[in-house]
Amino acid sequence: MLAGKHAIAPEVLDALGGSAVLVANLPYNIATPLVALCLEGTCRALSEPGRAGLCRFDRLTFTVQHEVADRLAAGAGSKDYGPVSILVALLGDVQLGPPIPPVAFWPRPGVVSRMVRIDFDAEAAGKLRDIDMLKRVVQLAFAQRRKQIHSAGRRKGARIDLAAFDKALARANIERSLRPEQVTPEQYLQLANFLAEESSRPPR
Image (tube, rainbow, N blue to C red):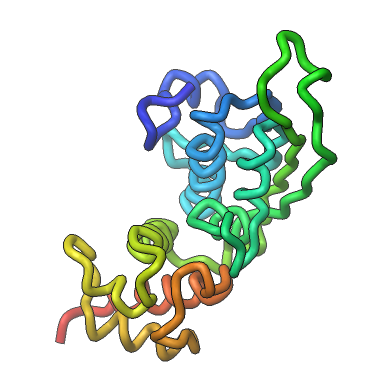
């Protein structure tokens, strides 16, 4: 289903058409990237209607390893909180079912599973100016999650103006000394939006 870690296979998207729902028992190794790609693609389909190669997933319902489910629904401050938690929080409404023991499956896995349902939230997604900017900011922040958030703009390959990053932190009311896991999804949204706004301005 995936063409590497960063894209859903084009032939799968072609077969699905412009709209679909996901119902699956997801293997551990593809669960996180697949959920992220479905949400990202749906966000792009919303902002770029008619663009070829996009599919809108209004609902994702799947069984996954318990630890992955916790990561998808984690809030700021949690050890499980990370880039995919932020993406899910900003683009969807997530609901977790009860744990499913190994005995419920054949053959039995060696882990406890959990059912997850994510409904895409078009209204919430409409508040995001640029999905690529959000991804870039979050990936930079969590590349070194023990570092303070202000250092993200200084990392090699950041491709973000340092002065603009510092200004965006202040506008989003994010303390420079916070660590990435202490910054809420809403603050990451504001940070990405301010940076997208700044980058879209014509040079003086």
